[in-house]
Image (cartoon, rainbow, N blue to C red):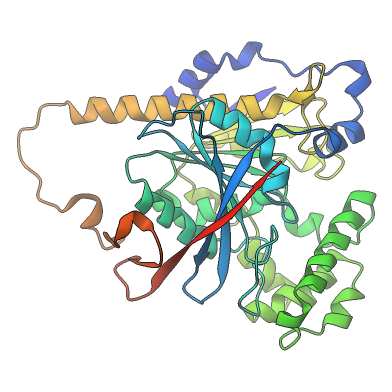
Length: 400
């Protein structure tokens, strides 16, 4: 079932992607919501090679970007760059399916790993909270500087959707993204994660968060009581003991005020596709805000009866139905946007408009000052301020 508000963009998407006749119908053997949720984890994934790149943030923290390397696939100069945001405790190894699908469509894919996540180092005594988009903002700016002529798209899965929605709402029309997709997002996050871990999936998530905390205990022991955090058995208690000290929040109300993914949903101006299943064992279908998608013309919601959480496995052998849908949606929006921009540029002009273009605005990205074609250490001016974003080229490569 599709939920949207009538607009020229949504009409183009419905016709181009044939969404009204596009159904998700898994076979009876794979219809269980739990099996749909587990299949993407246990099934063999396509072979993908990544090249890791480390970026230093303004506060000296480090995030990792895993770029997909396909020497036999020709990538166009102005091809779409897809930023993949994995769930909170996952990394590039879990995202090989969407990266493979995007690359086969001619896109350039890169996986964003939060600081300390995805096997990356933690150079500051702070982990990124659920909805803090500050690191993602610097990464998006860097990618835009590196490939200014390429449209930027983003796709997020599970708990990664909260970060993407927070970013889109906080930065609005200056998000520098053309289109986004969210697979199995959770909307009413403060209520969902204020209760105890009352399901197996919640216990697994909490266990993996604690494992990450133990891995970086040496770097965090000066600002956190690690033993007390390890004894927490509710998400609310864990967030209060871990993330509140990082950001100086006095209580959980203040924490969720700054981390609720739909806190600034009114300011989102980027086309967004959200895909949810009614049998999701992690995010209840009753929490889906249907009125939101009927109100805003840049939102599109696709709801399926089956699919589990980040599953949507169809066919035999099972393949991700959601990955293909997200890539098709991204292609449609990029095509629509490019066509409209081209028409506007070809309109007759009766007077000149003075301005410095993209790099002249104080709110836009300033020009990059570097050498050796991004090799070695470079410094980039961001927002015309003295803060710098340093790039370190890593020679790490790993293959699934």
